[in-house]
Amino acid sequence: MRTEVPSDLLLHEMITDALPADSDLTPMKGFKLDLSANRGFRKVFFSARCGCGTAALLSVEVAEDKTTEQIEQALPALAGKLQAQATTFHTMSCETHARMRLGPAAPL
Image (tube, rainbow, N blue to C red; front, side, top):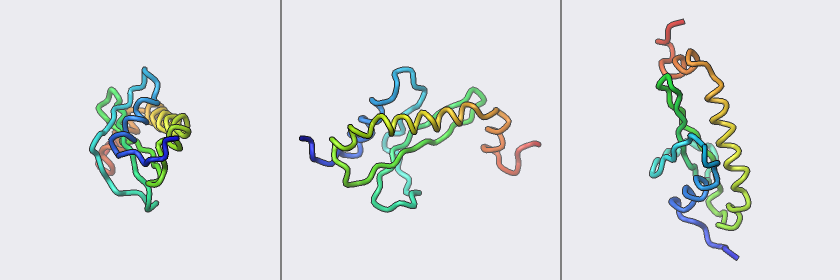
Protein backbone atom coordinates (compact mmCIF):
# COMPACT_ATOMS: atom_id res chain seq x y z
CA MET A 1 0.00 0.00 0.00
CA ARG A 2 1.36 3.44 -0.98
CA THR A 3 0.38 5.59 1.97
CA GLU A 4 2.95 8.36 1.55
CA VAL A 5 1.98 11.84 0.37
CA PRO A 6 3.72 12.50 -2.97
CA SER A 7 5.97 15.50 -3.52
CA ASP A 8 4.66 18.36 -5.63
CA LEU A 9 6.85 17.19 -8.51
CA LEU A 10 5.56 13.62 -8.32
CA LEU A 11 1.96 14.84 -8.07
CA HIS A 12 2.47 16.92 -11.21
CA GLU A 13 4.03 13.96 -13.04
CA MET A 14 1.19 11.64 -12.00
CA ILE A 15 -1.44 13.98 -13.39
CA THR A 16 0.56 14.69 -16.55
CA ASP A 17 0.96 10.96 -17.19
CA ALA A 18 -2.81 10.45 -16.74
CA LEU A 19 -3.62 12.81 -19.62
CA PRO A 20 -4.23 11.32 -23.07
CA ALA A 21 -1.13 11.04 -25.26
CA ASP A 22 -2.66 13.48 -27.77
CA SER A 23 -3.43 16.10 -25.11
CA ASP A 24 -2.35 19.62 -26.01
CA LEU A 25 -1.97 20.63 -22.37
CA THR A 26 1.46 21.84 -21.29
CA PRO A 27 2.56 21.14 -17.71
CA MET A 28 3.50 24.27 -15.77
CA LYS A 29 6.07 22.68 -13.47
CA GLY A 30 7.21 24.91 -10.66
CA PHE A 31 4.34 27.32 -11.25
CA LYS A 32 2.84 28.23 -7.89
CA LEU A 33 -0.06 30.55 -7.29
CA ASP A 34 -2.00 30.43 -4.06
CA LEU A 35 -5.33 31.60 -5.41
CA SER A 36 -7.27 28.72 -3.94
CA ALA A 37 -10.09 29.60 -1.64
CA ASN A 38 -9.60 26.11 -0.23
CA ARG A 39 -6.83 25.99 2.35
CA GLY A 40 -5.10 22.64 2.60
CA PHE A 41 -5.11 21.98 -1.14
CA ARG A 42 -2.33 21.88 -3.71
CA LYS A 43 -2.97 23.24 -7.20
CA VAL A 44 -1.43 21.63 -10.25
CA PHE A 45 -1.24 23.91 -13.30
CA PHE A 46 -1.29 23.35 -17.05
CA SER A 47 -1.63 25.68 -20.02
CA ALA A 48 -3.66 25.37 -23.20
CA ARG A 49 -3.02 27.52 -26.28
CA CYS A 50 -5.10 28.70 -29.18
CA GLY A 51 -3.78 29.60 -32.62
CA CYS A 52 -4.82 33.21 -31.99
CA GLY A 53 -2.10 33.50 -29.37
CA THR A 54 -4.27 33.27 -26.27
CA ALA A 55 -3.19 30.90 -23.53
CA ALA A 56 -5.36 29.61 -20.71
CA LEU A 57 -4.09 28.65 -17.28
CA LEU A 58 -5.88 25.48 -16.16
CA SER A 59 -5.63 23.73 -12.82
CA VAL A 60 -6.91 20.99 -10.57
CA GLU A 61 -6.71 20.86 -6.78
CA VAL A 62 -5.65 17.94 -4.63
CA ALA A 63 -5.93 17.90 -0.85
CA GLU A 64 -2.51 18.14 0.79
CA ASP A 65 -3.02 14.97 2.81
CA LYS A 66 -3.96 12.68 -0.10
CA THR A 67 -1.67 9.69 -0.44
CA THR A 68 -0.16 8.42 -3.67
CA GLU A 69 -2.67 5.57 -3.71
CA GLN A 70 -5.65 7.90 -3.22
CA ILE A 71 -4.40 10.18 -5.99
CA GLU A 72 -3.88 7.23 -8.34
CA GLN A 73 -7.53 6.30 -7.81
CA ALA A 74 -8.62 9.86 -8.58
CA LEU A 75 -6.40 10.33 -11.65
CA PRO A 76 -9.10 9.61 -14.25
CA ALA A 77 -11.34 12.28 -12.70
CA LEU A 78 -8.50 14.81 -12.36
CA ALA A 79 -7.42 14.30 -15.97
CA GLY A 80 -11.06 14.51 -17.07
CA LYS A 81 -11.49 17.85 -15.31
CA LEU A 82 -8.42 19.26 -17.03
CA GLN A 83 -9.58 17.99 -20.41
CA ALA A 84 -13.03 19.52 -19.84
CA GLN A 85 -11.45 22.88 -19.01
CA ALA A 86 -9.32 22.67 -22.16
CA THR A 87 -12.36 21.78 -24.28
CA THR A 88 -14.25 24.76 -22.91
CA PHE A 89 -11.32 27.04 -23.75
CA HIS A 90 -10.90 25.61 -27.26
CA THR A 91 -14.62 25.94 -28.09
CA MET A 92 -14.53 29.68 -27.36
CA SER A 93 -14.13 31.93 -30.36
CA CYS A 94 -10.91 33.83 -30.92
CA GLU A 95 -12.94 37.02 -30.40
CA THR A 96 -13.82 35.79 -26.92
CA HIS A 97 -10.15 34.96 -26.35
CA ALA A 98 -9.22 38.52 -27.35
CA ARG A 99 -11.75 39.92 -24.86
CA MET A 100 -10.29 37.67 -22.16
CA ARG A 101 -6.77 38.78 -23.04
CA LEU A 102 -7.44 42.49 -23.46
CA GLY A 103 -10.35 43.07 -21.09
CA PRO A 104 -12.06 46.46 -21.54
CA ALA A 105 -9.50 47.44 -24.20
CA ALA A 106 -10.77 44.71 -26.56
CA PRO A 107 -12.53 46.04 -29.67
CA LEU A 108 -16.22 45.22 -29.77
